[in-house]
Image (cartoon, rainbow over the protein chains, first blue to last red):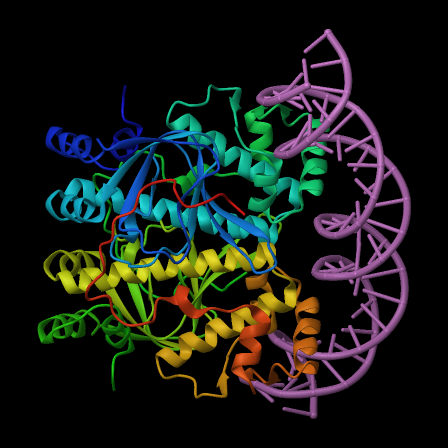
Length: 255
Length: 255
DNA sequence: CGAAACTTTGAGCGCATTCAACGCCAGTGG
DNA sequence: CCACTGGCGTTGAATGCGCTCAAAGTTTCG
């Protein structure tokens, strides 16, 4: 069984045989977890990080009034709290959305890997940047996109991410998320989310069944959503970042 | 003149004399920039990072329909694109909001510092985590908080951050932001933002004058906003992160 | 002083919410 | 096999938060 974590890191930096061996050794502490369990709680001091090998999870936060805000989806190959290894406080909660197979990694192990293996370090750093880029894109969506475009954008993103790890075939993919979860991602009520999905269905942009989505025409959905996959930084590893110079403040005004 | 960048990093990791000297040397390429100029454009390949020494800037993205979404405020001491040093593509634009004094740092310089000085590396890593935590909190606010609480929360955050670098006295602080910028941060129209501010003023939670905010009773504003400064990770440097163990999936259910 | 940028106010509309009820489906136990 | 239950999704009606459009007031700056 291939390790999706290693697969994903290999997309983002060149890994040699020793790197892969080290990663394989680090992710050998494997556990099964039910759906709907917390892996880490906001404000706690975990000391252990996880990697999702199978299943879906999410990072989330709760608000005073009982509302929930989903901050990220974790799919196979994604780590959680990996880059928080120098904090003594989790800045968000993490919960499984489906039954999951996860690997536990101690913070010491992570620090050791990051310090001794530059390739791994670079791949982890890259992952952090992707996390941040996704978070930014969600903020844009929730703030400045209409609900239907925002959902379409989210579906495009998930489709792209799942394709990158071979979990989605071209036209359609299985999305084991409830509407309530999508709503808490998009900042909508689940009633309204239901209507938005119905609209997208009526427009022929998606076909949704029980916990699965199929996209008849990806291009059309992407155009509708204004989706540009560039921010996912999937386009090849950056073996050689071009170091161009630039002068400050010469380009143009805002807007 | 003290260097706020070094001050801020020193909050986040212990820096010895050599670290400080190295940082001082790295930030000696200083420039003045007008307000409203772009320091970096989404999708470009900058190759140079900046540190704000004086003034305010922001990270932002534009949407197809002309909308703008502000993703972060950069205050004195904050870096921009520092951690993107291994990307060859900026994932957002950066623009000055006021006249700024900035220092330019080449990516090679950053990489060198991060590689040779563990303390600096740790401080930079810490900064990335704070960036992410703030972004998450904004996502929660824009998605699940009412407009007035969201704005109150944002004002609390900015006040706390400015106090941390000595740019705000206890009861009030100067906030050189236009309502249009606040609106693009909160995902609101500027007309509605004007009303929200008026409501907060009427409720006695803030007193706002021309580009300045004063907060008569910080506690009251924080309570109203549900603000907990923990996510800003300002509470002391993490010289000794406690390494506690934890078992997966034993804590509780979502909600 | 005049122009441009920013802020405020009012009126009307619409997207999204809440509340409530019903349909659907899977699992469970009689 | 059927009734019961709980989670999830859908639909309808009424309310409201926040938006658009438009215009006037206010600062700032050249």
